[in-house]
Length: 402
Image (cartoon, rainbow, N blue to C red; front, top):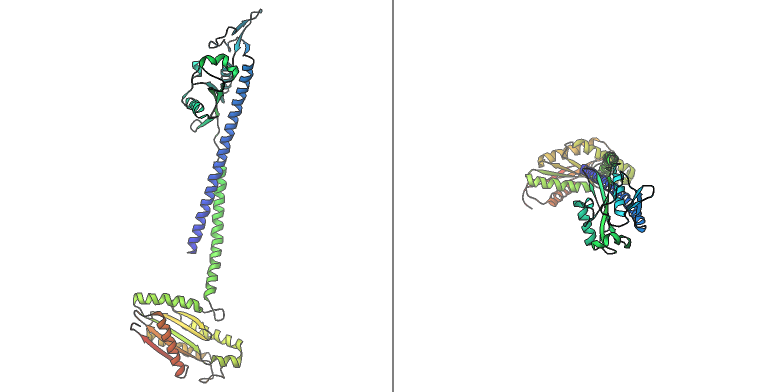
């Protein structure tokens, strides 16, 4: 079960680190996207500012050249001016200026401007599919901006509406626009470098691995510590045998197994004869040492892995012998009784011997019986052994339902 706790902790740690990595990546991607939006918005606002300056001056005149030709879509009488020196100037309105700036920016192959409208005067300003959707949303939902990323080409495109000002009516009033109307928009496109996420993945992978190693190491240490604590909670501190609590749990488990498998189960209760007198004569420290020697003798006598020896209380001990018949339990009890005698622990206060002895009560069962009856019969057998003069073994065998 403790191994499962370590595995669960490791899985939870991995999930936590994975969530952290995903969250950090999303935050970086979000910041990257917001940076793209801010850059594009700055370019857009710069173009709008220059257009407004142009519009406030009613357009600006520039020399006609191979790069700049008169705007055929500008229908004003003063579009072109011939100077006395033979130079020809042509008026550049905001829309034409935007196209000229867009052409110049596009030569660098990094930035693209496109002035467009759902009702363009210049067919070259016609909107593409995405721009049409954006312009429609500007007019129908009062949306102030729209943007998109093309993951394949890694191109970011931003668009915001152009709002009709009074200075714009000279050219656009004939199209039915009024001040405040959305008459079109400008899209700004540039290459957006992909977010570099491998440092985050690498760092979080290292964190996950280090965390899992730490969980494994400290988990095993905690498991050993809990095992030690659990063992200490089951052990009698004086005799180092199992305590009464562990005995009760073990007897219940073995009783259920015996009834399920219809196998024999025996219990032996042991009591040190005249132990109160021993304490009175030799003192409690000597009494404790006597109990430790008896406990060691019991542990040395009963060696099967399934057998259990516990301190039952005071000077009483108990043995649980699974798969042991009454005859086998009696034989073990006699062996234990003789073993204690060979310890030759002096006992001047005993009325049966000059040395410490024990009395033993044996109870065995086989079949569908109540658990508490087995221990009760063992106690009755111990009483009979004491009544019979102590330093002896008495038994009770049960096979009927009680």
